[in-house]
Image (tube, rainbow, N blue to C red; front, side, top):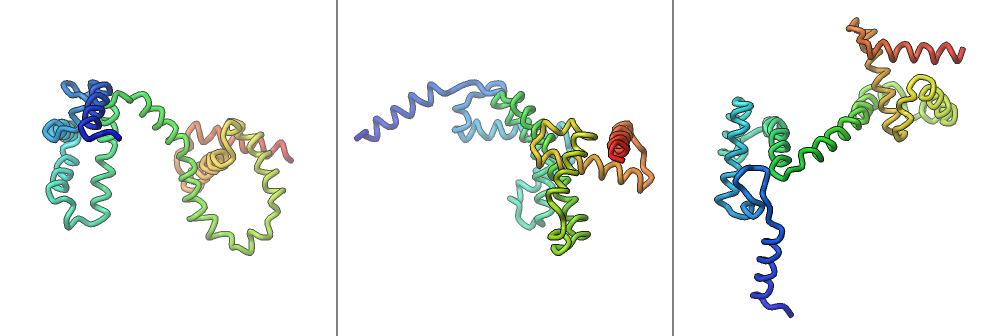
Length: 205
């Protein structure tokens, strides 16, 4: 069996081999395990937040000082979610993974229509159609109609999986509906989608 001294020596060697410079000038990975250095790094983060967003900095400083005591959940959530993008950027720079972070952000944004679709189902579809109504739907016909619409008007969604494609189409159509029913500005993107829907409809007549 390996003794305590051998384990400590192995850990020391492994730590030395994996140590590297952080993206925060003057610090190395091993400094993250040093309480004094770690505090210095944290202070640099707080200083950056203060420079970029003084109001958030003040709220965050008070929250940390109070350790969250007596803060309402909604207020805690607001402070932490507002601070999250700054922390995400700081950590990405610290570990030199800014490019990977941007790739992840793009992928998350690409999936945004799914969240909008979930809200659409919760706020409108469920209220309009009961469980009894849904049983009466012909799933095969609905699937065929959706695929025809997707191919005729929204072929750009063919590269997506079914969930993202349906969500994207729903988002485009509800955005157009809102603009028309609420007398909002018809942007070039909305007009483009309206034209494609109209052309697809005319082709089926």
